Image: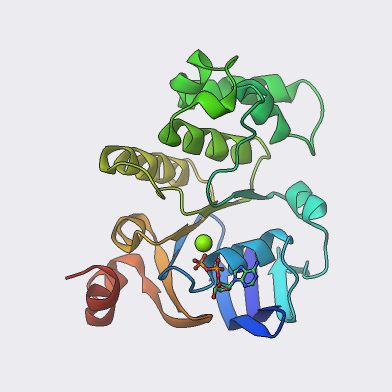
Length: 234
Ligand SMILES: Nc1ncnc2c1ncn2[C@@H]1O[C@H](COP(=O)(O)OP(=O)(O)O)[C@@H](O)[C@H]1O
Ligand SMILES: [Mg+2]
């Protein structure tokens, strides 16, 4: 098991946002976490990357308890996040945004990695000298994913990559996520777009008000009556 979360709880003051989450991610898997707005998806991701304190339970990575490890150290281990709302640095160039994704690393490989990103996302190459804030929403999402990839993720955490994008771009982003999985990247995909996420996921979890209420193969969740009714509008 690459990542193993047991009994995880987290609070905002007296409000309990996560109520004892158990979740596992194996190496090479694409695991989806779906749930409505406010279910606790972002809170869980932020607990995994270490920017949100946990109040109980454990997070193990590669068998080692990282529950108290700093966010910087977790990035160093390869836990790399593309945050909700993309959060690219608008005034900085596309290229400098990419460079930031490799801030835990040094040396000549960074140039090679950047070239690899430009190959994967030709539009970022074309716009590499422009301020990131001038990119469209879809391009900023590609940049946020590429920036996370620059950290050499052993697990890539994606928080709602399709949020706010037009349908054609949503399809493009999901194709990119699928291609990354096929290249062997381990991915934890958090989405309100349950249909698209479960359709490409090996396994999925359904989160409701801070608790996992269902977990199964992605394909099985897609045909689950409860999921269909609550999340797929079918
Ligand atoms: N900074 C915060 N302060 C207080 N409550 C918060 C904060 N962030 C999130 N919450 C609450 O925690 C719950 C889970 O939020 P969140 O993790 O953002 O859900 P999701 O990503 O699934 O939409 C919600 O009820 C939300 O109102
Ligand atoms: Mg969220």
